[in-house]
Image (cartoon, rainbow, N blue to C red; front, side, top):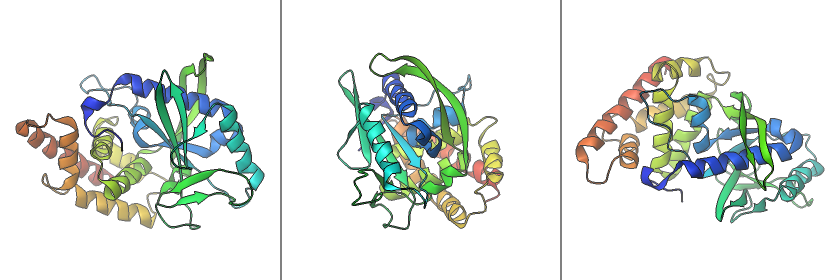
Amino acid sequence: MAPQHRSEYDSAATDRCERVLVTLLGDIGPWGDRVVLVGGLAPRYIVGSDPLSASPHIGTTDVDLAITLAVGDSSETYATLYNNLTRSGFATGDHSYQWQRSIDGTTVDVEFICETDQVGPGRIHRLKQGTGSGFAAFNAPCAGLASQDNFEVPVTAERLDAGGLSTATLRVAGVLTFTVLKVLAFQDRHHSKDSYDLVYTLNNYENGPEAAGEAAAESAVRSETSVAEALELLQERFESPGNDGPVAYANFLADRDDQEHKARLRNEAVAVVRQFLSGAGA
């Protein structure tokens, strides 16, 4: 389980994740065009340069990638991805959809998610099972939206194994898809970090949460039924300061016994989500 309080994160962990990401993208060839960054590393790219008045995003300890599946993919296609990851020094983790690299004694997980009707939500989809491809992804509802709602950013970091500085083109989930996936993740597991990631990103989006909503309204996936349902869930979870969304946000940021700070943060979370939903026309 990911750490659930801001005190458990540091910038070094996020830097390690970025190095892992640049190394992976540089080594998987054409697959780089079929993976989109979602999860806790995405806010630093969605928000961009941190506003002077805002605290930097707390970061992350792992990397989540949504992978696009295609009907015509052969077993050799996934076997190539599997082999490229292995040659790059990654090893499968505790679950088959996880890959790991160790940096200075610290393990960084990379998790692949997808959206498919081949297995139920929350199950592991073993692509081309029985053909020797060996590659798997976690089936997450709405993960497929990332292939239609993303943007590209150049990311420069030092490659692992003393490989030197390298720049990779990274696809990052758009603010709407990121929000949808985050509220669904929060609904499923109630991690305080998911609520924090969501509220932080909307609040610090360029020109504020209403502008984030306006950007969401222009997304190619805004008219999807699953998106409308997720936004209804977002409204429900953040409807009042006593709901679980604002409470989780406050618990992640505030000291355990600082009730006054928690109250302010709960109110902030409600206001941010309301402004976003207003801009999104929800």
